[in-house]
Amino acid sequence: MPADTLCWADIEAAQARLAGRIHRTPVLSSAALDAASGARLFFKCENFQKTGAFKARGAGNAVFALADAVARRGVATHSSGNHGAALARAAQLRRIPAHVVMPEGTARVKAEAVARYGATITWCAPTLAAREATVREVLTATGATLVHPYNDYAVMAGQGTAAVELLQQVPDLDAVICPVGGGGLISGTAVAARHLRPGIGLFGAEPAGADDAARSLHSGVLQRCEKPQTIADGLRGALGDRTYPVIREQVADILTVSEESIIAAMRTLWQVLKIVAEPSGAVPLAALLMPPAALRGKRIGVIVSGGNVDLDSLPF
Amino acid sequence: MPADTLCWADIEAAQARLAGRIHRTPVLSSAALDAASGARLFFKCENFQKTGAFKARGAGNAVFALADAVARRGVATHSSGNHGAALARAAQLRRIPAHVVMPEGTARVKAEAVARYGATITWCAPTLAAREATVREVLTATGATLVHPYNDYAVMAGQGTAAVELLQQVPDLDAVICPVGGGGLISGTAVAARHLRPGIGLFGAEPAGADDAARSLHSGVLQRCEKPQTIADGLRGALGDRTYPVIREQVADILTVSEESIIAAMRTLWQVLKIVAEPSGAVPLAALLMPPAALRGKRIGVIVSGGNVDLDSLPF
Image (cartoon, rainbow over all chains, first blue to last red; front, side, top):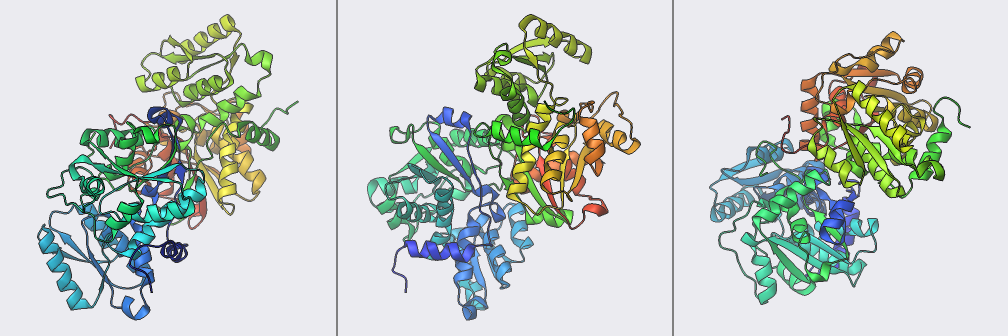
């Protein structure tokens, strides 16, 4: 029976469960970006992950952790983004039904990705209240299990497996930095990295226009962001009651960055590192192009969270 | 004393010489692209190579193979593209002078890359005659050694090291396909791959608007393309008298593709594989999206040759 927090054993179990079901993504580096940041940067390219984002890890772990009798009734979530596609893919792999509630107005390319993996889409009004009410209806009607995008220990554990691979690929890191939305990636990353390398520094990066995690960490009290305003659509979520305590305990700092710096960092990843990263995935590099003193000259693992963008409407 | 052809021993020596001086680039795959091609594709991402293209291998091998007394007088080439930057970088690593003759009208971003690595640029009129005359003047004035972009055994051997890595990363390939311009990459690839896996099929891919290699292979006589017309600027070169014999002997076929299919394949690499590839690097995928019968269902290594593009003028 799992304790009510995220443990290394959960991440180890996730590793085993995900083996052969996801990509082991490569780590890239660039002398030009090292020079620009004044540090040694190692980019863990989760934009190359199945479904184009690290979300395939957490959703995959949650789906494959279910007991057969429970799994048979399916899984459900509400998501306008990468978690919906990741859950749909995991359910397809396990041959169980997936239900994804999507707010009207979701980018067509994202709905197509969910549909391509065979999930049933239920549309709702574009408010949090409507999303939650609609997903409750779906759960009642189908008996499906809710897989929350981040406030779920199995999801958090799955996300932590990226850091396990990263530390196998580059063992001697001084720090790891990843983007922060709802906190699933950073909480899994923190528990994994600090187990494998206890002295490592854990950093988050967040848009200034959606800085609930930075304010929560700095004040010691869980804060909300009423109207998140950022191009980094993956980072608009608010911390949850399962992710926040892990962050409070394990994360050294959360750095905030401007919209301009996110767009510039995204362009730099494309131009210099030759990878297609979405705005959320460029947020850590935005922070590292003006690094705080604690990170200067260090060997830093940088998790590039995803690469799902519409090539017809680039921000640069 | 090397024989007057390209041998496995040259490629083995290049491997040793390049160790620690270039990236070991990752291999990516995509279930969606496998489905689209009806084959299993393994993309060797030389767009992530130092200087953004496989050219760092050949230029690096040529520069580090020089005897000290010769190297001291520097190296020179004429190039409007990736070879110029690769030679400049290799010379900078060896701390010797590099001279790059560039035709007026070369994209500023390419000249900047050459200058960033400390090479001396000599501008000339944009004709082959002017380029050759100018480089001869540079050679006479400086005593530098000419490093041709492809018609040079040390360069060809260096390019072959990408296939050595690819076959270490994915040993059980049925075929390898790479783009063909002057033939440096495909000749090195052929000798390396067929030494390591004698039964492997070697394929080239070429724009229909610059199809001298396909016509040479099919006719058995070295052909020229008078006015190559293609967006794939890396593939406008004509085969040389050192690359053509290797191709004639070792390459199963050279497939030609339309401009439209190159642009579509480039977009697919960005959208689906999440990598920034230049038009030349997308030419093999363009061929594989309508594969010949010989390649259907096979395990195919695909060399993505480079990723140097101007993000401000994308063709899609």
